[in-house]
Image 1: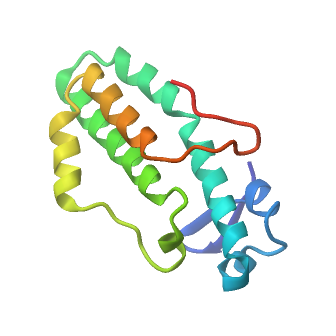
Image 2 (image 1 turned 180 degrees about the vertical axis):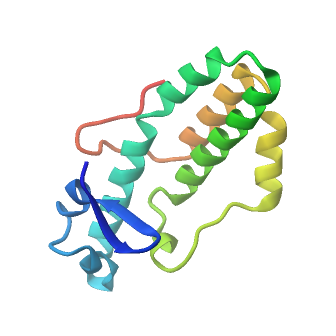
Length: 138
């Protein structure tokens, strides 16, 4: 996928946002809020398509410390994506997870069963709608 660079920290997929606006900056305009949300949701849905691969990778890790490290990162990522999905605040500032929630996720993500439960919980929090004909499957 081609990336558009709009600032040193912003890389976005042209193939996605160009379906919603002529210029990436158009999505920041208040009159384009609905299109911006649809674009955001599609990008998040696209990212979540990799969740099964994440679970497959985590399932082959044998070292407990390595597993705990990668599992904690992945459950925090899923929780963050769920918090961002359909969230208008994404266009007004930074959407962050509370430190306590991050610590709880890190503490709890210590085996595959727990990781799957955490991921499922956060995916259930999202009101899934078809996005380019794709759904998340676990």
